[in-house]
Image (tube, helix red, strand yellow):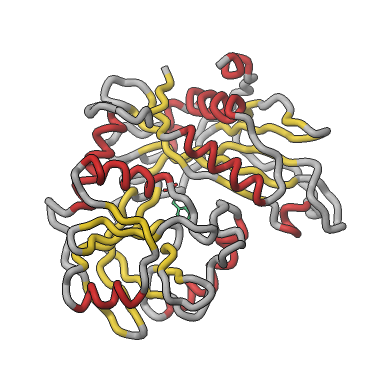
Length: 355
Ligand SMILES: *Cc1c(COP(=O)(O)O)cnc(C)c1O
């Protein structure tokens, strides 16, 4: 990429790196020293630059605040066993970003700009990539309307920013989830498949209600009848039912998770039968009752897999057996970890190696 070499870097004179306790990172608590910023104006993306991370001067009239043109991505970079840096599944994240941007009438980002921007920011803050097993550099590309105007319109000016954050191993303890039968995250034909900020804003209230009732998250159901399962919080949901991997088929109300796609691909490699189809609440309830549903987990970049301990349906708590060493979710998580580290072959070209 010729652009990578040409992105100007203005380095900070006050690195915060030495203040970070890498043995206790948590998730999303720290932002690395630098950020990439590119402006969209006059119908095109302008030259990106890397500058010290800090506040931006923006107008409170900027259109993203009022009318919601804001989309983001969430991805990770790792140290590989051989010392190289690996940014995982860049191409698929780029395609999804552009699908989200298109849904929100926002300008596409070229693969060249996206890839060069990622490489440049990850190289600039390479010392921020944690080295412990299971840790990584979380990467947050975000695009938002920056034009200042009160009138309702599609903006003509945007910012593309990439932030990064060193994150620790995500030991997610098994979660308690409630099947949401009143509120809706996304309806067919809406913006559910786009990674846009507003989807999160609208999900907070029902999630807070569920928290007050003692749950960690909700499982969203279809907007029409609440009969079919969509996904859970910021994760796609997967079940092991009758020894098959069962997950809701993608629709316009479900986010097309990269982790979901990765797990489906690896499951087939592991010889597991995969079913992507409509999954009814009733079917899940039956499976929990007759114990044919043996595993349930969330799939997302942050935790990879997040085991589910309890699912509440119509007020009844159903408990899943504890995750065992030979559980599918652990086997697939390990298989993925090996590919990312470079200790297993990367036969699908998922690793984007930064030298
Ligand atoms: C980001 C996200 C996911 C998970 O996608 P990954 O690409 O696997 O991280 C699932 N659901 C929603 C609503 C999301 O925003």
